[in-house]
Length: 300
Image 1 (cartoon, rainbow, N blue to C red):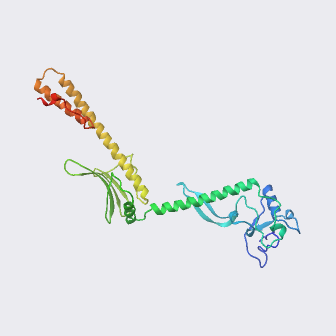
Image 2 (image 1 turned 180 degrees about the vertical axis):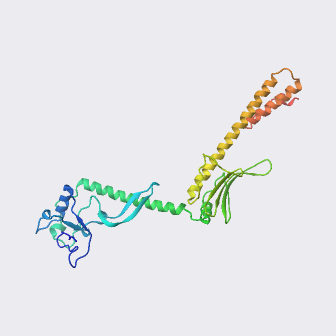
Image 3 (image 1 turned 45 degrees about the vertical axis):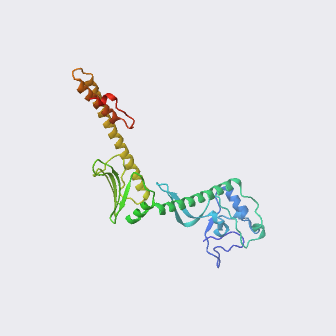
C-alpha cells in the first residue's frame, strides 16, 4: 500500500488514516503542476519513482464518486462508482498541517486551459443535476401505477371538447358521441381496463389504422393524451373523406340533372321538377346557409 508524499500527511502511514491515493499524472504539463503544488524542502518530488497524493488534498469538485450516462430515451442516469476518481483538471490544493511555503503560496497559477476545463465540467455537472431533477419531477407528475391513479390524473386535467369521459372501478372510458336523427351515436371510444391495457373502437369495431398507434398499456398520462389526439385526428380525416364522397355523388347527380334538363323530350312540369331537384342538390353541396332558391323553383 502506497503512502502520501505531501509533507506532514499521515495518509496510509502507521496510525494514520486509510485514504485513497492518486498517482501523479503521466501528462508532462499536469505532472509539473502537481510537482509545483507538492513542494518538499527535504527531497525533490521529481526523484520519486511513483509519488502519490491522497484524496485529502483535493477539492470536492475534483473528486468523482458517481458516473453518468444517457440512455436511448434521452434520460441521464447517475450511479455510484466503486472507487473515487479524479476529474481531468484535478490538482492538489488542500494542505492541512503543512509548512507555510506550501499552504500560503503556490508557485504557479491555475492555467487558463485547466480553468476552462474545470469550469466546463462544473457547468456540465450542474446541467446533469438539473436534468435529473426535471426528469424526476415529470415522472412524479405524469406516471401512473394503477387505474385509480390514472382516473385521478385525467380528472385533474382540462376537459377536451371532442371527448366525454366516464369512469368506474373496472375501467376508464373516453368517447366521442355524435348527434344523430334518432338517438345519439358513439362514434369512437378509448377504453383503459384495470391492468391499464388499452382498446380503441370505431363504430363498435376495434380500430385498426396506420394513422393511430395504440399502446399496449397506459403508464403515463401523456401517452393517453397523445393517443386521444391521434384518434381525434383520425376521426376528422374520416369526416373529410365522407364529405368528399357525398360531394362527389351530388356533383354527379347535378351533372345528370343538367343533362336531363337539356333534353327537349320532357314537358314543362317535369322541367320545373328537375330544376327544383337541381337546386336541392346545389344546396346540399354548400356548407354555408346563404343559398337561395330562384323563384322559378317554387312555380310548379
